[in-house]
Length: 98
Image (cartoon, rainbow, N blue to C red; front, side):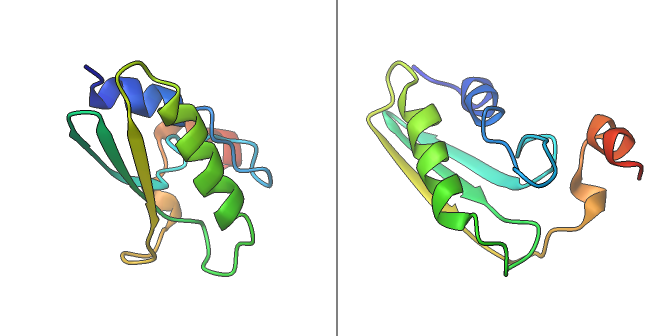
């Protein structure tokens, strides 16, 4: 059965094209829920006006959907709470000069 660590590892393949860093390091993944073969991902974007939402949703479904035992992936984009740079990992902050 898939676990949260597996899902987060798969999500590290989802890259923000403008910043060049993955969604996990950027702190854009707000939650992972696993129930049997169903995986729910709650994520955000750096700004509500960011045009890559549909692309990110597809990538999340693709990468997480490839994990053994995953039957369905529900990717939900939210904007509450709003993303801020303090949600980034220390490595991402360093890479972006924060």
